[in-house]
Length: 334
Image (cartoon, rainbow, N blue to C red; front, side, top):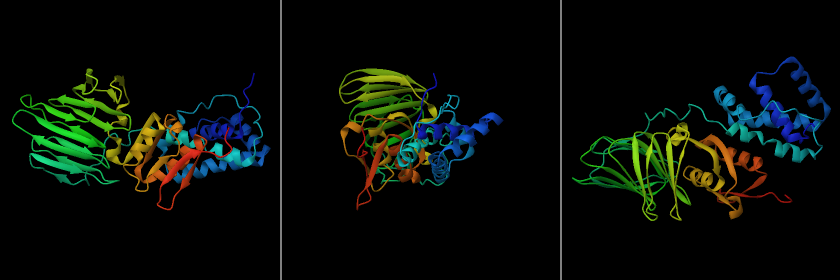
């Protein structure tokens, strides 16, 4: 039995297929027939094209996004929703546009970042939207994300950093005689030489290993784990320590001013976005916190991306006089 889909779903699938470059002649004819069948079809399709162009993805990004769309599902005659609802929900393709994981951000261009060499005891902070690289006295390179706070203290026995806010990417110089320790309120990460990221979220601290291995100790729960490259640990506020594989392309993508999320909680996305968006993004209700989002966009595209994410989740945005964006349930939504 053919599955009935909405105008928005049909537009999204047709648009994805048309962008893939894999359409054959019969499919092209079916698309033209579908566009001609109802004005709402054409409007939804064109709206997707406008959103796509506004985001400004490159062709490799477009191709990667389309991999997340099932273009092979059979499309039946769409259910006739009101035009506006079809257009708004139709922009759900932006979820596909945002579902992009490519080599952009894999090799960050850090040529424009200032290099700083601190004293043995120092404090470093970054403002909203700032990405800052520091070279420690042992040669370790630390890149701080926006809105971060880090304390550095070296001694003859160890190299210790405390991250109290934000996130950092660490490329640690090897020194077996002096372990390198990064601590937060939830975890202590101990290494001698490796590459990893520490990211502080609202309800957990996250440690992601790119190269080498690290020992993660949950300071309040007492649990610990040894992570290798491609593994990630989440230390929650209730004392749990969860280890799982992760996409290496996501690690430190923000160093290239790109934010990447895969099946992430909306609350975590908002937390990271607020490191780069001056006005701030807020959830009107805690019920929205656990909604799942897959997205990738530049830090300069936050407003456009948040609008698209809201539409794909059937939420709406409210702008305040201070420039903040509030995400809330759409009025009249079921």
